[in-house]
Image (cartoon, rainbow, N blue to C red; front, side):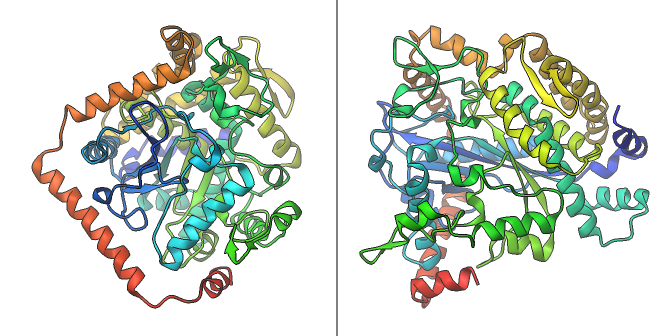
Length: 518
């Protein structure tokens, strides 16, 4: 076992209670679709509140790509309960529409049929829509309709204080936390291939999604495209990517380096974007012509995060107050789960993240930066191939042997979390994931391909059936009156908050953008 992991487990097993107070929050994306499966063209419903100011119901890229957000919660049950309530509220207010439950999208039509999210007339609202217009210009709009779940996780100060004391570290507590969160981030990327195997659920896609693109996928008679051993095409090179980002290496070795590299990317022009233009005929096309318009455009499996304040950029928040939590971003929507994620998956993600945090985390080398995307692509395309090998420092190694070794290290971490939270949920979730390694047919990706057989190989038919069934399940469980009133009041307040923002004097938009990046 990793020596650093053994050292941290030794003291934590004596006082597991210092892990009590962990906070987790979920962000779930889902496309709103018409009853026939085509992307909804309706605006974000007023009954859902303001997508700009509502803390729990917003939109992502498209007006039809809803995002449901829980507050930070002190238990997995509370977080899932919040997500369930918000689903029930949304379904009560979107009429006959459904929420698409697969990561890969529904019937989209041409790019200009994908409506950009709208956030009102304030400068910040205009900037959010402009950012999305720029994404469409750079990547194509359909690439932005892929959905997933982000799992946000933080650890309590009691844990950090005891760890710092054990380590004899004399820095500020925040500096200690930031360094350790970066350690988590590096290890998460090193081992994320295991999550892609276990939690990937997008081995197939509607053929229209990749129309006109070279893709290398196999075709079913229905027109569905797939790979027989794929795990998560969402996380493959077919998903969110572009040439500019492929050449962008952001350091995760120190917080200052991470901030510097992202800040440089939002200030460095990229010739094709310069050629596309920032303003045409007096109308903004993108925020700027740089490698990244803003920091969030950089797509990663995991991000170190800090809650931003009004007018603040993500890197400014990190520079001023350090890392607050980790955002785990590589989880596909589970089409067999009403919420898109199971309780077991949530427990396992926390085991995995804590293992990444406690284990030794050497700084990335250039060679390791090169290997990471190669292993990711191999796993998303061939994860259930029994002969799959991944690249490591000592050369290629059998994926299943690497996974078995990693599971051995995860077991005491799961037992530690069970002891901290007086549950058996973490160990039972780990046991389920170990079974998936022994029997690949249990993985979500294998289950999707089997389900396609019941729908004559048609991804659209399978996904539409899933969406219909989940809609029926939520509508059969309306919210209690009191909870409905609470969420209605929250929606009304968000609309009032947006109106108040728009009533304030606004800088000329050019000046607002200049000030934002100053």
